[in-house]
Length: 396
Image 1 (cartoon, rainbow, N blue to C red):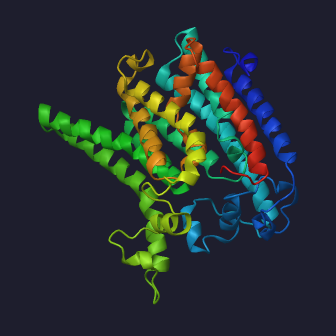
Image 2: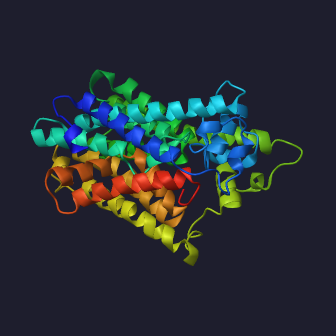
Image 3: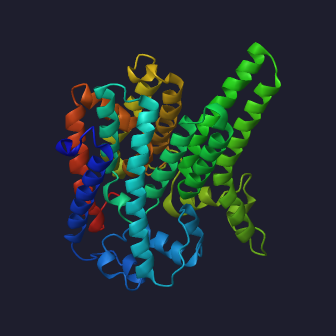
């Protein structure tokens, strides 16, 4: 892919690389065998040639897009409603939406990279371009081609970061609220989007500190109020669906068990009840292979988060606090994946966080040992994972 990336034509280079990579993935998926022991896809009539893309969770996504939230466990997922009665049409639109979202997120990541890292030197230009290219071959692989939430989440989360990083000057109010709105929508797609609310929480702490040190002023109070409103908007992306579910399942004659909890959350309930998700619940002997599979990505996320908050990082000198703000959410994501998620999912849900791309790109551009082999490993893993995905074989 390195030969395709030309600094003087970044958008063209990324577009060509994206098209070639997606074609390769689709060829791998098309070569996968029949449904095997996976009968869930057969429940969606007329899927046909899209069968190998509608595996695992996309069965839920396609059903949600067609009929809305019918079953309780479907509230673990977020996906837009599509106006069609044909599962095959919905699957096709879902695949197209994933490809479009992934492509746009590559371009947005490039723009975000330029905004945060700059491109005033050839080395920085290469870092920005390579980071965006890494998002094309991310370990998420086929999950960014299938009708999954990850591509749309990545687009919304990157866009939120881009708008947030540009929220200076006279347009700060609109951009800050715009970023919060994007994070809120991203959170409805994937609940880990709530981690992006850290940006507003850290800003609020800094503003409160400034009030204590420099005293109260109308301008300072207005800035703090704006940040609090932005944080509330992000929280609404998580709380809103919970309120809708509470209305449907709790304000009835036969409320569900989770309605009686101190903090009733259908999301927490279905994750625990249907997928046994919870603190250290995944820590079993049988899951050791999945922890080993997730270890490279967990290590990359941890190292890049430390790099992002380090004042000794060569890149962090340009906008040190902003880079740290973006690094900490992905560090929290890695910690949550290690302790409370199905750990192997970190290989796909990490696709919507930018700092680890910058870290690998920076290491590769500056010739750090291990960077190039890591990128090669990611490429090979993504191809193998596409074959496993299309054959309905773990991991997912």
